[in-house]
Image (cartoon, rainbow, N blue to C red; front, side, top):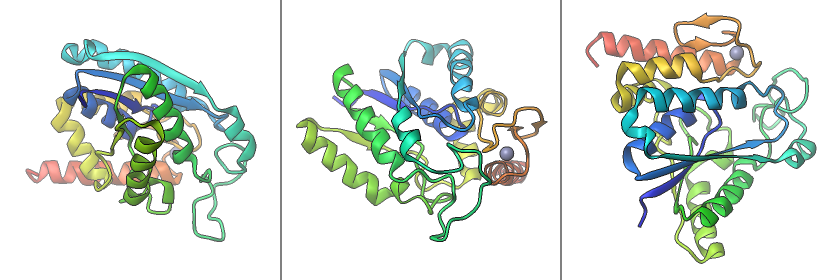
Length: 236
Ligand code: ZN
């Protein structure tokens, strides 16, 4: 039965919304993250606070939320040469991919997640991968994940389902989904506790959350939030 899920939960906005989505659907939900020497570990530090806030504010979800797993993938940091893992400016590479791209990162994550899920008796993997805003990341595309789902199911000889609730949503729609799942309380939780900023900046609190306010990730989050608020204000 597909009623037990493992959520790839980084501590960012998207994966937090995916976690709420899973908690609404599945009887048991566990979480996993990968520590691969990110330039700033701020996201990982947000995770326990998000989990604690979810448990405290959503008692119905607290009973479903099980173990949290953090895997050390330092090796991935060593074989990557990107702005996420080294102190470099975030620029576009020649191929047009953002410099934060770790080649094939999501494929590696999904393999490890599937192995943990198998051992834990969880058949659904949930991730915040999305084609709408990050089409530059080929390992986040729907077809890539469908192929991965087949490969994992065959390789484990056990049916694996990969759910990506944000795949076709833009950032404004992700905020709307947040409100649908947990009301303004969840929107506020995401604003306060999740992290998105590429620079790891948490000194400034904006209407949409903490961040430098200028990097590509902050810009995307701010625009999405403003659009969401405008739509909500217009009765959307
Ligand atoms: Zn930023």
